[in-house]
Length: 98
Image (cartoon, rainbow, N blue to C red; front, top):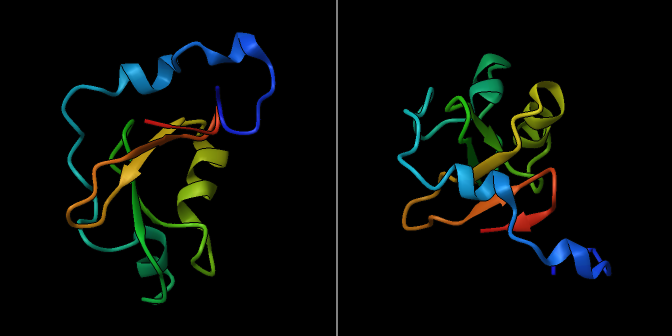
């Protein structure tokens, strides 16, 4: 069942996560939050990369929450952790981890 859902119909696999199962795009700013860097800041907790375009943004524990802001601005639904040793993905549209 999807996070936050009590609807049994919502147990179907997230199509967006399935679509991003192939190779990842090239990170636009490897190891750095693109938007924080543009602001001249380096105050982020963890990095997330958009699997539609390679945008690297800071996580929701960071002051600016640029990864979520990128989803809200573009509608690109899936990101993955851009932290060393992590490979989990998240679909914003369905609040589902993959």
